[in-house]
Image (cartoon, rainbow, N blue to C red; front, side, top):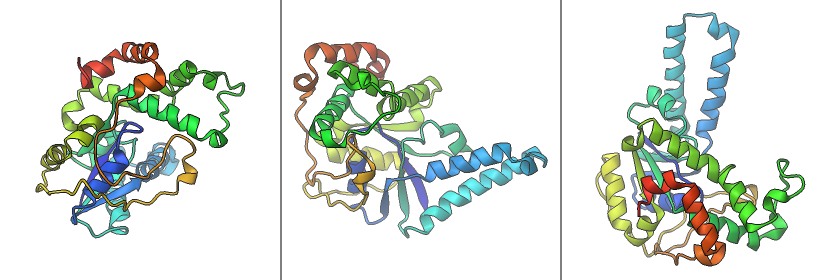
Length: 271
């Protein structure tokens, strides 16, 4: 079994990509996975349990990394007998160096999207579901969500948008971008077969001809656990969507987003 990873920005087509890949009978695309979180809990325990710390450090390091690799393999062998698994989690890019220790040459696909479109999508969902807006302990007075500009600023400086962007920029600083496979949402929806061919080449897997007019949803997630900002229901047809972020956010705020995130745009959306 080969295990690769889907580590996307929010609202950037990660669920769509998982279901497209699942058309290939050799592939299993997970819903939002917490495998990385399970391993992180184990890493925390490994780092502080006295009985482990008292033993030979190098021997325990090898044992723990073997445990992590075996746990990952066992996790998916209990779920599927497909030959290739794509585990979907936003945590893998942040943990690349650790992952590489027990899963050599990890293949991580990173779906991204113009931040203005990401934030426009967030705002549209915020307006669509006022009855589901959760209480935020970090914003007891509601000031951070009071205006469109404060909402955008809040999303850019918190989970899931801000954290995902910062992790990706951190990966760039560490020289990891050549090891990742960046997939722009705009390209996936306008040139899907070309983009999928690139993904297969990156994964070192045979190319597969997909049906982009009828992508059936096989991933299952109960969206009651993802209030307001995330849903996991895909459109059956893969096609480019209108770029409406200026209508939703306004021209001035769109320019501010681009200016304040110049590094992201220079790396992934130059010009």
